[in-house]
Length: 493
Image (cartoon, rainbow, N blue to C red; front, side, top):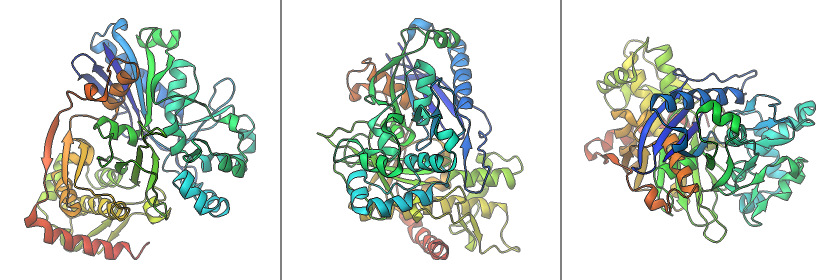
Protein backbone atom coordinates (compact mmCIF):
# COMPACT_ATOMS: atom_id res chain seq x y z
CA UNK A 1 0.00 0.00 0.00
CA UNK A 2 1.30 3.44 -1.00
CA UNK A 3 0.37 6.84 0.40
CA UNK A 4 1.23 10.09 -1.38
CA UNK A 5 2.15 13.26 0.48
CA UNK A 6 2.32 16.80 -0.90
CA UNK A 7 3.95 19.83 0.70
CA UNK A 8 2.65 22.95 -1.04
CA UNK A 9 5.30 25.50 -0.11
CA UNK A 10 6.06 28.99 -1.34
CA UNK A 11 9.61 27.98 -2.38
CA UNK A 12 8.75 24.67 -4.05
CA UNK A 13 6.22 21.87 -4.24
CA UNK A 14 7.35 18.57 -2.71
CA UNK A 15 5.92 15.10 -3.19
CA UNK A 16 6.71 11.80 -1.47
CA UNK A 17 5.67 8.20 -2.03
CA UNK A 18 5.38 6.34 1.27
CA UNK A 19 5.23 2.57 1.80
CA UNK A 20 2.60 2.00 4.48
CA UNK A 21 3.67 -1.58 5.19
CA UNK A 22 7.32 -0.78 5.91
CA UNK A 23 6.81 2.75 7.21
CA UNK A 24 9.55 3.95 4.87
CA UNK A 25 9.74 6.56 2.12
CA UNK A 26 9.91 5.06 -1.36
CA UNK A 27 11.00 8.25 -3.11
CA UNK A 28 10.65 12.04 -2.95
CA UNK A 29 11.18 14.97 -5.27
CA UNK A 30 10.51 18.69 -5.47
CA UNK A 31 9.89 21.27 -8.19
CA UNK A 32 11.08 23.76 -9.28
CA UNK A 33 14.76 23.23 -8.47
CA UNK A 34 15.26 26.97 -8.02
CA UNK A 35 12.95 28.80 -5.64
CA UNK A 36 9.45 29.39 -6.98
CA UNK A 37 8.71 32.97 -7.96
CA UNK A 38 6.81 35.18 -5.53
CA UNK A 39 5.20 38.17 -7.25
CA UNK A 40 5.24 41.51 -5.42
CA UNK A 41 3.16 44.02 -7.43
CA UNK A 42 3.51 46.56 -4.60
CA UNK A 43 5.84 46.87 -1.60
CA UNK A 44 4.83 44.38 1.10
CA UNK A 45 2.69 42.28 -1.26
CA UNK A 46 3.37 38.61 -1.97
CA UNK A 47 1.34 36.55 -4.43
CA UNK A 48 1.51 33.25 -6.29
CA UNK A 49 -0.70 31.56 -8.88
CA UNK A 50 -2.45 28.55 -7.30
CA UNK A 51 -2.66 26.82 -10.67
CA UNK A 52 1.15 26.75 -10.71
CA UNK A 53 1.13 24.74 -7.46
CA UNK A 54 -1.27 22.27 -9.06
CA UNK A 55 0.77 21.91 -12.26
CA UNK A 56 3.93 21.19 -10.26
CA UNK A 57 2.10 18.72 -7.99
CA UNK A 58 0.83 16.84 -11.05
CA UNK A 59 4.27 16.82 -12.68
CA UNK A 60 5.90 15.39 -9.54
CA UNK A 61 3.21 12.76 -9.06
CA UNK A 62 3.39 11.44 -12.62
CA UNK A 63 7.19 11.36 -12.56
CA UNK A 64 7.48 9.60 -9.19
CA UNK A 65 4.78 7.04 -9.92
CA UNK A 66 6.37 6.16 -13.28
CA UNK A 67 9.96 6.22 -12.00
CA UNK A 68 9.19 3.81 -9.16
CA UNK A 69 6.86 1.53 -11.17
CA UNK A 70 4.05 2.02 -8.67
CA UNK A 71 0.82 0.36 -9.79
CA UNK A 72 -2.32 2.47 -9.61
CA UNK A 73 -4.12 -0.07 -7.42
CA UNK A 74 -1.37 0.25 -4.78
CA UNK A 75 -2.04 3.97 -4.19
CA UNK A 76 -4.60 4.26 -1.41
CA UNK A 77 -4.39 7.73 0.15
CA UNK A 78 -3.19 11.31 -0.33
CA UNK A 79 -2.24 13.87 2.30
CA UNK A 80 -1.67 17.58 1.83
CA UNK A 81 0.57 19.93 3.79
CA UNK A 82 0.45 23.56 2.72
CA UNK A 83 1.81 27.05 3.34
CA UNK A 84 -0.36 28.57 6.06
CA UNK A 85 -2.46 31.74 6.04
CA UNK A 86 -2.79 32.03 2.26
CA UNK A 87 -6.04 33.07 0.56
CA UNK A 88 -7.33 31.36 -2.59
CA UNK A 89 -10.59 32.58 -4.13
CA UNK A 90 -12.67 30.66 -6.67
CA UNK A 91 -15.97 31.26 -8.44
CA UNK A 92 -18.84 28.78 -8.88
CA UNK A 93 -17.00 27.17 -11.79
CA UNK A 94 -14.04 26.62 -9.44
CA UNK A 95 -11.93 29.07 -11.44
CA UNK A 96 -9.31 31.08 -9.56
CA UNK A 97 -10.37 34.73 -9.36
CA UNK A 98 -7.03 36.33 -8.51
CA UNK A 99 -3.51 35.28 -7.46
CA UNK A 100 -3.27 33.84 -3.97
CA UNK A 101 -2.34 36.34 -1.27
CA UNK A 102 0.24 34.21 0.51
CA UNK A 103 1.57 33.96 4.05
CA UNK A 104 4.30 36.65 3.86
CA UNK A 105 2.04 39.31 2.29
CA UNK A 106 1.71 42.37 4.57
CA UNK A 107 -1.11 44.30 2.96
CA UNK A 108 -3.75 43.44 5.59
CA UNK A 109 -1.72 44.38 8.68
CA UNK A 110 -3.65 47.57 9.41
CA UNK A 111 -6.97 45.84 8.64
CA UNK A 112 -6.24 43.29 11.35
CA UNK A 113 -4.83 45.80 13.83
CA UNK A 114 -7.97 47.93 13.55
CA UNK A 115 -10.19 44.88 14.00
CA UNK A 116 -8.24 43.91 17.12
CA UNK A 117 -9.07 47.25 18.72
CA UNK A 118 -12.67 47.57 17.52
CA UNK A 119 -13.83 43.98 18.05
CA UNK A 120 -12.09 44.07 21.41
CA UNK A 121 -8.78 42.67 22.55
CA UNK A 122 -10.44 40.61 25.29
CA UNK A 123 -12.68 38.73 22.84
CA UNK A 124 -9.94 38.26 20.25
CA UNK A 125 -7.43 36.85 22.71
CA UNK A 126 -9.82 34.73 24.76
CA UNK A 127 -11.91 33.36 21.87
CA UNK A 128 -9.69 33.56 18.78
CA UNK A 129 -6.44 33.21 20.80
CA UNK A 130 -4.90 35.86 18.51
CA UNK A 131 -5.25 39.30 17.08
CA UNK A 132 -6.91 39.09 13.62
CA UNK A 133 -3.56 40.46 12.45
CA UNK A 134 -2.36 39.77 8.96
CA UNK A 135 -4.15 36.42 8.69
CA UNK A 136 -6.54 34.99 6.12
CA UNK A 137 -9.72 36.63 7.43
CA UNK A 138 -8.07 40.06 7.24
CA UNK A 139 -6.80 39.33 3.73
CA UNK A 140 -10.34 38.45 2.64
CA UNK A 141 -11.57 41.72 4.15
CA UNK A 142 -8.85 43.55 2.17
CA UNK A 143 -10.18 42.01 -1.06
CA UNK A 144 -13.72 43.02 -0.09
CA UNK A 145 -12.64 46.63 0.44
CA UNK A 146 -10.17 47.02 -2.41
CA UNK A 147 -11.35 44.61 -5.12
CA UNK A 148 -15.15 44.59 -4.83
CA UNK A 149 -15.53 43.28 -8.39
CA UNK A 150 -13.52 40.22 -7.39
CA UNK A 151 -15.28 39.82 -4.05
CA UNK A 152 -18.72 39.75 -5.70
CA UNK A 153 -17.72 36.69 -7.76
CA UNK A 154 -16.40 34.61 -4.83
CA UNK A 155 -18.03 31.23 -4.34
CA UNK A 156 -15.57 29.96 -1.73
CA UNK A 157 -12.50 31.34 0.08
CA UNK A 158 -9.93 28.65 0.73
CA UNK A 159 -6.48 27.96 2.10
CA UNK A 160 -3.80 26.68 -0.31
CA UNK A 161 -4.25 23.06 0.81
CA UNK A 162 -8.00 23.28 0.37
CA UNK A 163 -7.40 24.35 -3.23
CA UNK A 164 -5.17 21.36 -3.99
CA UNK A 165 -7.73 19.03 -2.39
CA UNK A 166 -10.41 20.63 -4.58
CA UNK A 167 -8.35 20.02 -7.72
CA UNK A 168 -7.90 16.37 -6.73
CA UNK A 169 -11.45 15.57 -5.63
CA UNK A 170 -13.75 18.35 -6.81
CA UNK A 171 -14.81 18.83 -3.16
CA UNK A 172 -14.37 22.18 -1.37
CA UNK A 173 -13.68 21.71 2.32
CA UNK A 174 -11.44 22.84 5.17
CA UNK A 175 -10.66 21.87 8.77
CA UNK A 176 -11.00 23.38 12.24
CA UNK A 177 -7.23 23.70 12.31
CA UNK A 178 -7.38 25.56 8.99
CA UNK A 179 -10.14 27.91 10.13
CA UNK A 180 -8.20 28.65 13.30
CA UNK A 181 -5.07 29.59 11.33
CA UNK A 182 -7.19 31.99 9.29
CA UNK A 183 -8.59 33.50 12.55
CA UNK A 184 -12.09 32.37 11.66
CA UNK A 185 -12.48 29.96 14.62
CA UNK A 186 -14.05 30.74 18.01
CA UNK A 187 -12.51 28.29 20.50
CA UNK A 188 -15.01 29.11 23.24
CA UNK A 189 -18.03 28.55 20.98
CA UNK A 190 -16.37 25.72 19.02
CA UNK A 191 -17.67 27.22 15.78
CA UNK A 192 -16.76 29.79 13.14
CA UNK A 193 -16.57 33.22 14.76
CA UNK A 194 -19.80 35.13 14.20
CA UNK A 195 -18.13 38.27 15.56
CA UNK A 196 -15.29 38.39 13.07
CA UNK A 197 -17.54 37.48 10.15
CA UNK A 198 -20.04 40.17 11.15
CA UNK A 199 -17.36 42.81 11.77
CA UNK A 200 -15.67 42.16 8.42
CA UNK A 201 -19.02 41.84 6.62
CA UNK A 202 -18.11 38.38 5.30
CA UNK A 203 -20.91 35.96 4.42
CA UNK A 204 -20.46 32.67 6.28
CA UNK A 205 -21.39 30.86 3.05
CA UNK A 206 -17.96 31.78 1.65
CA UNK A 207 -16.32 29.41 4.13
CA UNK A 208 -15.94 25.78 3.00
CA UNK A 209 -17.57 22.81 4.68
CA UNK A 210 -15.63 21.53 7.70
CA UNK A 211 -14.12 18.03 7.62
CA UNK A 212 -11.96 16.28 10.26
CA UNK A 213 -8.20 16.59 9.70
CA UNK A 214 -7.85 12.79 9.62
CA UNK A 215 -10.78 11.52 7.56
CA UNK A 216 -11.98 10.45 4.11
CA UNK A 217 -12.35 13.90 2.55
CA UNK A 218 -13.11 12.85 -1.02
CA UNK A 219 -12.13 10.43 -3.79
CA UNK A 220 -9.82 11.48 -6.58
CA UNK A 221 -11.74 12.54 -9.70
CA UNK A 222 -11.66 9.90 -12.48
CA UNK A 223 -9.96 12.26 -14.93
CA UNK A 224 -7.30 13.21 -12.39
CA UNK A 225 -6.71 9.56 -11.50
CA UNK A 226 -6.18 8.68 -15.15
CA UNK A 227 -3.85 11.63 -15.77
CA UNK A 228 -1.68 10.97 -12.71
CA UNK A 229 -1.67 7.19 -12.73
CA UNK A 230 -3.72 6.84 -9.55
CA UNK A 231 -6.39 4.45 -8.41
CA UNK A 232 -9.95 5.79 -8.86
CA UNK A 233 -10.55 4.70 -5.26
CA UNK A 234 -7.63 6.78 -3.95
CA UNK A 235 -8.83 9.15 -1.23
CA UNK A 236 -7.65 12.48 0.14
CA UNK A 237 -7.61 11.74 3.86
CA UNK A 238 -5.47 14.38 5.56
CA UNK A 239 -4.70 18.07 5.25
CA UNK A 240 -2.90 20.49 7.55
CA UNK A 241 -0.93 23.72 7.48
CA UNK A 242 2.79 23.25 7.07
CA UNK A 243 3.70 23.91 10.70
CA UNK A 244 1.07 21.72 12.39
CA UNK A 245 2.01 19.11 9.79
CA UNK A 246 5.72 19.50 10.48
CA UNK A 247 4.99 18.89 14.16
CA UNK A 248 2.90 15.85 13.23
CA UNK A 249 5.68 14.54 10.97
CA UNK A 250 8.00 14.60 14.00
CA UNK A 251 5.40 12.84 16.19
CA UNK A 252 4.85 16.04 18.17
CA UNK A 253 1.26 15.52 19.32
CA UNK A 254 1.27 15.78 23.11
CA UNK A 255 1.58 18.65 25.58
CA UNK A 256 5.18 19.72 26.14
CA UNK A 257 6.49 18.38 22.82
CA UNK A 258 8.18 20.91 20.52
CA UNK A 259 9.06 21.00 16.81
CA UNK A 260 11.10 23.43 14.73
CA UNK A 261 11.79 24.21 11.09
CA UNK A 262 14.30 26.53 9.48
CA UNK A 263 13.53 26.82 5.79
CA UNK A 264 12.58 30.04 3.99
CA UNK A 265 10.89 31.02 7.23
CA UNK A 266 11.69 29.76 10.71
CA UNK A 267 9.22 28.22 13.13
CA UNK A 268 9.06 26.82 16.63
CA UNK A 269 5.82 24.95 17.37
CA UNK A 270 5.00 23.84 20.92
CA UNK A 271 1.93 21.78 21.86
CA UNK A 272 -0.06 22.67 24.99
CA UNK A 273 -3.35 21.36 26.42
CA UNK A 274 -5.02 24.64 27.34
CA UNK A 275 -6.22 27.82 25.67
CA UNK A 276 -3.42 30.35 26.05
CA UNK A 277 -2.17 33.44 24.26
CA UNK A 278 0.51 36.11 24.12
CA UNK A 279 -1.08 39.46 24.94
CA UNK A 280 0.81 41.14 22.09
CA UNK A 281 0.14 38.30 19.59
CA UNK A 282 3.86 38.02 18.86
CA UNK A 283 3.43 34.25 18.87
CA UNK A 284 0.20 32.65 17.80
CA UNK A 285 -2.04 29.81 18.88
CA UNK A 286 -3.92 27.49 16.53
CA UNK A 287 -5.80 24.21 16.76
CA UNK A 288 -3.32 21.37 16.34
CA UNK A 289 -4.08 18.43 14.03
CA UNK A 290 -5.43 16.34 16.94
CA UNK A 291 -7.32 19.12 18.73
CA UNK A 292 -10.81 18.46 20.08
CA UNK A 293 -12.92 20.52 22.50
CA UNK A 294 -12.77 17.63 24.97
CA UNK A 295 -8.98 17.21 24.70
CA UNK A 296 -7.54 20.58 23.65
CA UNK A 297 -4.30 20.43 21.69
CA UNK A 298 -3.12 23.94 20.87
CA UNK A 299 -0.04 24.67 18.80
CA UNK A 300 1.88 27.72 20.04
CA UNK A 301 3.58 28.97 16.91
CA UNK A 302 6.56 31.27 16.67
CA UNK A 303 6.97 32.26 13.02
CA UNK A 304 9.90 34.27 11.69
CA UNK A 305 9.55 35.26 8.03
CA UNK A 306 13.20 36.05 7.47
CA UNK A 307 15.43 33.06 8.23
CA UNK A 308 16.67 30.69 5.50
CA UNK A 309 15.70 33.25 2.88
CA UNK A 310 18.62 35.36 4.14
CA UNK A 311 21.03 32.46 3.59
CA UNK A 312 19.55 32.02 0.11
CA UNK A 313 19.86 35.76 -0.59
CA UNK A 314 23.57 35.75 0.26
CA UNK A 315 24.16 32.68 -1.89
CA UNK A 316 22.50 34.34 -4.89
CA UNK A 317 24.15 37.74 -4.45
CA UNK A 318 27.52 36.98 -2.83
CA UNK A 319 28.00 33.23 -3.28
CA UNK A 320 28.76 33.33 -7.03
CA UNK A 321 27.43 29.81 -7.51
CA UNK A 322 28.83 28.42 -4.26
CA UNK A 323 26.99 25.50 -2.69
CA UNK A 324 25.56 25.83 0.80
CA UNK A 325 28.11 23.24 1.90
CA UNK A 326 31.00 25.45 0.74
CA UNK A 327 29.39 28.48 2.41
CA UNK A 328 29.19 26.48 5.65
CA UNK A 329 32.86 25.52 5.35
CA UNK A 330 33.83 29.15 4.83
CA UNK A 331 31.75 30.17 7.85
CA UNK A 332 33.53 27.66 10.07
CA UNK A 333 36.78 29.59 9.68
CA UNK A 334 35.28 32.68 11.34
CA UNK A 335 35.12 33.09 15.11
CA UNK A 336 31.84 33.23 17.05
CA UNK A 337 30.49 36.78 16.75
CA UNK A 338 31.72 37.28 13.17
CA UNK A 339 34.25 39.88 14.34
CA UNK A 340 31.50 42.38 15.12
CA UNK A 341 29.49 42.02 11.88
CA UNK A 342 25.76 41.84 12.69
CA UNK A 343 23.02 40.70 10.32
CA UNK A 344 19.34 41.10 11.11
CA UNK A 345 17.87 38.48 8.75
CA UNK A 346 14.52 40.08 8.01
CA UNK A 347 13.14 41.79 4.90
CA UNK A 348 10.54 39.15 4.01
CA UNK A 349 7.44 41.02 5.12
CA UNK A 350 6.05 42.15 8.45
CA UNK A 351 7.26 40.08 11.40
CA UNK A 352 4.66 38.98 13.95
CA UNK A 353 7.36 38.65 16.59
CA UNK A 354 7.87 42.44 16.25
CA UNK A 355 4.12 43.14 16.45
CA UNK A 356 3.75 43.14 12.66
CA UNK A 357 6.54 45.63 11.96
CA UNK A 358 8.58 45.26 8.79
CA UNK A 359 12.07 46.35 9.82
CA UNK A 360 13.82 45.08 6.70
CA UNK A 361 17.09 43.16 6.51
CA UNK A 362 20.06 44.98 8.01
CA UNK A 363 23.84 44.58 7.65
CA UNK A 364 25.46 46.44 10.55
CA UNK A 365 28.98 47.30 11.71
CA UNK A 366 30.50 46.37 8.36
CA UNK A 367 34.26 46.91 8.34
CA UNK A 368 35.40 47.17 4.71
CA UNK A 369 38.97 46.31 5.68
CA UNK A 370 38.14 43.23 7.75
CA UNK A 371 34.90 41.58 6.73
CA UNK A 372 34.77 39.31 3.68
CA UNK A 373 32.19 36.88 2.33
CA UNK A 374 32.88 34.29 5.02
CA UNK A 375 32.05 36.85 7.72
CA UNK A 376 28.72 37.59 6.04
CA UNK A 377 27.91 33.90 5.70
CA UNK A 378 28.59 33.29 9.40
CA UNK A 379 26.86 36.47 10.60
CA UNK A 380 23.73 35.47 8.67
CA UNK A 381 23.57 32.03 10.29
CA UNK A 382 24.21 33.50 13.73
CA UNK A 383 21.55 36.15 13.13
CA UNK A 384 19.02 33.47 12.17
CA UNK A 385 19.77 31.45 15.32
CA UNK A 386 19.60 34.60 17.46
CA UNK A 387 16.19 35.42 15.98
CA UNK A 388 14.94 32.04 17.19
CA UNK A 389 16.32 32.84 20.65
CA UNK A 390 14.42 36.15 20.69
CA UNK A 391 11.14 34.43 19.87
CA UNK A 392 11.66 31.41 22.13
CA UNK A 393 12.14 33.76 25.09
CA UNK A 394 8.57 34.97 24.45
CA UNK A 395 7.29 31.38 24.51
CA UNK A 396 9.15 30.75 27.76
CA UNK A 397 7.51 33.84 29.26
CA UNK A 398 4.16 32.10 28.62
CA UNK A 399 5.25 29.34 31.02
CA UNK A 400 6.48 26.71 28.56
CA UNK A 401 9.63 24.74 29.29
CA UNK A 402 11.83 24.18 26.25
CA UNK A 403 14.48 21.54 26.84
CA UNK A 404 14.30 19.33 23.73
CA UNK A 405 13.40 20.45 20.20
CA UNK A 406 12.72 18.04 17.31
CA UNK A 407 13.39 18.96 13.69
CA UNK A 408 13.85 17.33 10.33
CA UNK A 409 17.46 17.12 9.17
CA UNK A 410 16.99 19.61 6.33
CA UNK A 411 17.45 23.24 5.32
CA UNK A 412 19.35 25.25 7.97
CA UNK A 413 19.60 22.19 10.21
CA UNK A 414 22.11 20.80 7.71
CA UNK A 415 24.56 23.54 8.70
CA UNK A 416 26.99 22.76 11.56
CA UNK A 417 27.34 26.47 12.39
CA UNK A 418 23.60 27.03 12.61
CA UNK A 419 22.93 23.81 14.59
CA UNK A 420 25.56 24.54 17.20
CA UNK A 421 24.64 28.24 17.53
CA UNK A 422 20.95 27.35 17.81
CA UNK A 423 21.48 24.72 20.51
CA UNK A 424 23.98 26.85 22.45
CA UNK A 425 21.99 30.09 22.57
CA UNK A 426 18.64 28.42 23.27
CA UNK A 427 20.26 26.04 25.78
CA UNK A 428 18.27 23.06 24.53
CA UNK A 429 18.98 19.66 23.02
CA UNK A 430 18.13 19.36 19.31
CA UNK A 431 17.03 16.01 17.86
CA UNK A 432 17.07 15.63 14.07
CA UNK A 433 14.90 13.07 12.25
CA UNK A 434 14.57 11.56 8.77
CA UNK A 435 11.32 13.22 7.80
CA UNK A 436 9.89 16.28 6.10
CA UNK A 437 6.55 17.86 5.34
CA UNK A 438 5.59 15.70 2.38
CA UNK A 439 6.49 12.47 4.21
CA UNK A 440 4.49 13.68 7.21
CA UNK A 441 1.51 14.38 4.96
CA UNK A 442 1.75 10.86 3.51
CA UNK A 443 1.80 9.37 7.03
CA UNK A 444 -1.16 11.55 7.99
CA UNK A 445 -3.10 10.36 4.95
CA UNK A 446 -2.45 6.71 5.81
CA UNK A 447 -3.69 7.39 9.35
CA UNK A 448 -6.75 9.27 8.09
CA UNK A 449 -7.63 6.46 5.68
CA UNK A 450 -7.37 3.84 8.43
CA UNK A 451 -4.26 2.20 6.95
CA UNK A 452 -2.60 2.91 10.29
CA UNK A 453 -4.79 2.33 13.32
CA UNK A 454 -2.91 4.62 15.73
CA UNK A 455 -0.28 7.39 15.62
CA UNK A 456 2.10 5.02 17.41
CA UNK A 457 1.81 2.59 14.50
CA UNK A 458 2.30 5.40 11.99
CA UNK A 459 5.60 6.47 13.58
CA UNK A 460 7.08 3.08 14.39
CA UNK A 461 9.93 3.58 11.90
CA UNK A 462 10.65 7.28 12.41
CA UNK A 463 14.45 7.41 12.72
CA UNK A 464 16.48 9.80 14.88
CA UNK A 465 19.57 10.80 12.88
CA UNK A 466 21.45 13.19 15.12
CA UNK A 467 21.47 14.78 18.58
CA UNK A 468 23.03 18.21 19.19
CA UNK A 469 23.75 19.17 22.80
CA UNK A 470 24.67 22.67 24.02
CA UNK A 471 28.45 23.15 24.04
CA UNK A 472 29.48 24.67 27.38
CA UNK A 473 32.85 25.83 26.02
CA UNK A 474 31.08 28.01 23.41
CA UNK A 475 28.34 29.32 25.69
CA UNK A 476 30.01 32.52 26.89
CA UNK A 477 31.13 33.66 23.43
CA UNK A 478 27.73 32.84 21.92
CA UNK A 479 25.86 34.75 24.63
CA UNK A 480 28.18 37.74 24.18
CA UNK A 481 27.52 37.73 20.43
CA UNK A 482 23.77 37.48 21.05
CA UNK A 483 23.91 40.46 23.44
CA UNK A 484 25.52 42.62 20.74
CA UNK A 485 23.02 41.37 18.15
CA UNK A 486 20.13 42.23 20.47
CA UNK A 487 21.48 45.74 21.09
CA UNK A 488 21.47 46.38 17.36
CA UNK A 489 18.00 44.86 16.92
CA UNK A 490 16.51 47.19 19.54
CA UNK A 491 17.44 50.18 17.35
CA UNK A 492 14.90 49.01 14.78
CA UNK A 493 11.98 47.69 16.84
